[in-house]
Image (cartoon, rainbow, N blue to C red):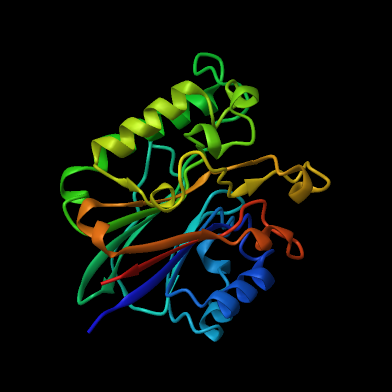
Length: 269
């Protein structure tokens, strides 16, 4: 008997502020698992009730007041919960859980990587240094045992690594999220653990692929100056179960939207 799992990831940019569109998304898409980033919500104020009413009984959160925060909500039980810290900062940026898929545990890592500020120079910008250090810690961790099992890593990783992950490769080479330094470290991190870039597995490298559009653009869709900041990585043991990925671009135009669109990944085994 086969099993089909739909997993979505979405930087929601304040879960309490965006609950109407979260509910709309859950009703329309019905993912089995939704990973949220930038929830900006202390654990005590998290909207458990609305999510359970929507059919998502299993909820794990790692939040803090006003900043960062990740949450994983699911129709299936979540076990083996892990909340990893990075760079001794005390930030809520990671949540690991197991969810049953095809009769075995599937590890799901939900991550929110630091944005890195505006100046792409670690010597004068502590935020950029923090981002590079964060990626280095990820590289030291996300290999070996973590990738020897079926695992998915999703989230707002705040880097658009390839030429067609941004609206203009040339214009953004010195813009944080697409600098050569970040992109090289990002690829080293992914390749060192043997992670598969699932989104690019289903969409050729020469096609544009975006998940984020700035609030600054008056007509974001017409201007289409996007970046792919949200990712789905898959460990080698899960490769055969990959079926599809998609970006729900329309959600960027919903009422009071996040500046990110949800990414949906489907697995079947």
